[in-house]
Length: 169
Figure (tube, rainbow, N blue to C red):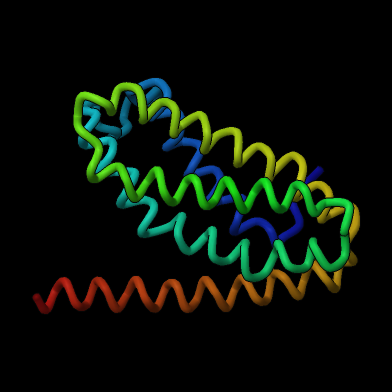
């Protein structure tokens, strides 16, 4: 099923996170021109950076604008939403803990993290988003899209503010 335009920005984030997950699972990039590091500590740093730049805001947007609508309109998906929220909590904790993880543990932790990211995203794309598109009206989907667009604009403004602060400092 083709993705509704309102959900496309989330799907783009999912794609980027899947690329990152594959790098964690395999330990190297499949693409010959990729700049994915082979050093596990550098990979952990890349994950933390990606979390701060993209995933944290992505999780916040899903939790604020997508999950509540699903819980309100599709009560039969409550268990899935609870599972996805638990995944978000676990992913936040694992990623935040990477900075304190000894390098000797990264060969085990990073592939496990990559698999968790991959499974989580597949659930959202294949189960949640399919259910949303099948059960919500176009107007409801558009309303979600409008809220996500505002969230992205605010997120973009925050990114620009951080870049400006780095240039000053």
